[in-house]
Image (cartoon, rainbow, N blue to C red; front, side, top):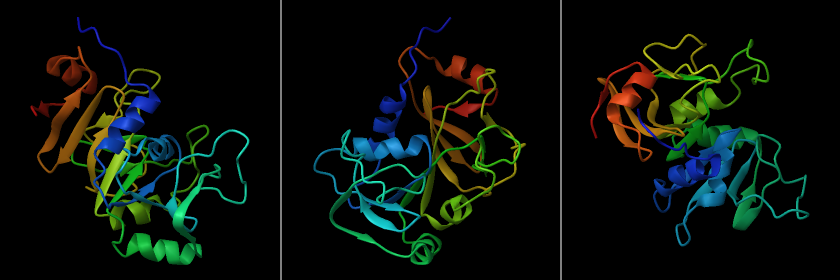
Length: 215
């Protein structure tokens, strides 16, 4: 039996951040993806965009330094880096839809092996009851990455052969970052990028319930 330790949310955010290239324009979705802003490697210029109209967003503010007039799309206080800008959310959506973002990092309920994305639901407790800007991001960004737990609280894989939740986008997800592994979605199915130490390829395939091509 495999003996492994899951990545913490902060470790997962750090794993995502290390793959963002220098000079990238990036949107971080509501929820776990916002943590990525705190882990951009030193010396790497990454320009963070928020769909409510911010470009040049910085990490979360220190305790006691929050400005609730400066928040991301999830209403969390953020900071603004030198040279950052505010603008109307219509301009922000034009940026998203116009292909000006290199990467968006979104949460999800389910991702199919070929990259279909389902990240909203009207029936899930605590879920955002509408698709919001995720559809614009998923299709408009040059790359869509998903950051999520691999398994539900009941132990079912969120990476599936076919999504049962409403679809946000079809074939749009390039990578899936989870607490146990990083996967690539291809038209032929899943490809392994990495796993946590101690988790074998065979054990991961058993958890997911789908074939995963070797790295």
